[in-house]
Amino acid sequence: MYLRNWQQKVIDDFSSIVRQHKRFILKAPTGAGKTVLASEIIERFYKGKKVIVLCHRLVLLEQLEIALGEKHSLRTLEISDEGTPFDGYDILLSTNLRARDVIVDAIFKADLLIIDEAHRVSRKGKSYKKIIDSFDEHSKKEARLLGLTASPERRTGDQNDQLNLTFDAIIDCADIRTLIAEGILVQPIYRPHFIHDLNLTNIDISSGDFPVSKLAPAIVKSSMIEHAVAAYNEERLNVSPKPISAWFCADVNVAELTLEQIRSFKINADIVTAQTPMKERMRLLKLHEQGFLEAMVSVGVLSEGWDNPHCNIIVHLRPTLSKVLWGQSVGRGLRSAPGKEKCIVIDVSSNWSTFGPVEKLRWSLWSHRRSYLKFLNRFNWIAQQHDGENSDDAYLLCENQLPGNLRCSHIYKKKAYNNDTCPKCGVYAAVNIFKQQKLDDTLNEIGLHKLFFSRVKKVYNEMDLSIWSNLGGTAWKMANDKEKIFLAFCMVFSEVSGELTGSESDYWDVALAAEARVRGYLVEKNIQLVKQDDFQLALIADGMKAGTQIRTLQSHYGLFICGDVFGSHTMPENERKYQKAIRIVERLAVMGCSSQDNLPYFNAAEYIADRAKYVS
Ligand SMILES: [Zn+2]
Image (cartoon, rainbow, N blue to C red; front, side, top):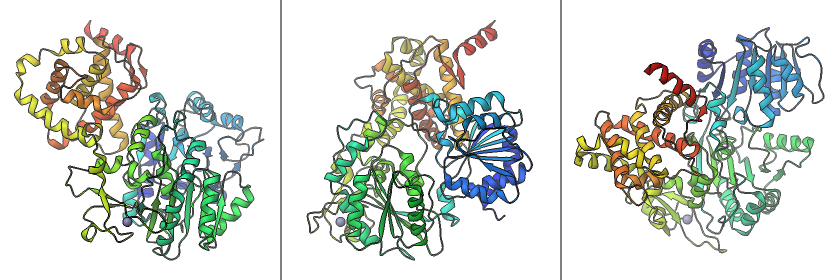
């Protein structure tokens, strides 16, 4: 079988991967070819052995049935299946919810367990817990658990439910930008419009995302659908060979209104939702794939487990607090196909300006409250690109009034077009988003970054080092809860390695090792970090300035610890240390730290016992 570069590399490294890791995730973007990789791994390394494949996606199940069926004996589990697993066959395929008892039995005999869409795996959730537990307890010594996903991120703020704790390693196999360069994926071209009349303030987000019951009416009241269809009418002329689009909507009501508007332009369109009967759904998706149906409007069914490589326009009408959902939806349009040069992403949901382009998304700790704050700002990503008011990275928002009472609302880069005229309506009527928003420097990441790198050097150089080097004990002892978080940040900065890490997995190994050392220090000194509801960058900024929440003693001592390591590292090293420190202190803040800590990478009781042995 012909393998792509990244697939070949995984195959070459596979023996060494399984030697090092019992449970690991292979991460590659949607459309990269994970199915081919899975069947190649089975073919080369597990011929005649027992393999379980759990898929969330029926598509993958079907593809594997075809790919493996010729050379292996396999069985696809039915919901009501019972009986002895691997009775007369080697490969067991199943969606994870079918016949779970058979799967649990099969784990005793299996040599390999593959889980597709592995970001769903949770030790706490109902669907996977039993399977993972039974793999831990009953699997053969040489058995391996292999997860596949494009986005190794759990949508939960619960730090003990993060994937890097369930799996030993997350192996970065390919990223979107490399695959674009290799021609496996196409470049997304974003067309963002800011929907000024969409009001999502005061929506209860305790469920983790905007509740559809509140989101949908707000969308219907706004000009979102109108904007989406207007932009689509222009962009459909800009793609080759012909426009094939997927529309992501928040609910059936929004989807039906959208469909109506698309059809009013005589565009061939239809709709699929969770309520669409399976047969009808398959029929419509087939028509779409064959190009007979130009626009497929959808609610919740296309973001996973659907693939039409000819799709070259994505229209996003679903504001979300989930970066993963945003990434998944856009990913649907990136697979390359003959004649397809790019994928246009029309975003009227503010996801682009909030999270940024999908090819630049980075893993981070997920907190729905923080996502909500970012979303309310709606220019979060843009603000982070900004380095000073007159920077070339400024973005403009077109406020031109179009006929029919619609504002243009297109967002575009300053200095990218002649006289800064809007590329969509041809008029200059824009405001500078950064100036308009008057973003509070201390509340966004770029502001804090600047503050940190200017303050540490300055304050440290003016300090009487002999005094401050002795004030650590007092600073910690007198610190209140917020000050402790600030001091912890400074300590992590000084502790964490500034070396370049090769992969996401290495990054987290280094980060968690530093976190463990800081926990060790705190536990040994009897210092407790009280769990915070949320981590605020502003708190760190306050300490940098000896502001109102962090007092002078703690502020200066913190700056002293940072300054002390600053000089002995290069700027790129300090930069990497800083980036990790921000993420680690967030973990410390939301998880807290005490002598009760029992984490996969740090157990307080064992740590204390070890230290006692070492001392005596
Ligand atoms: Zn415009």
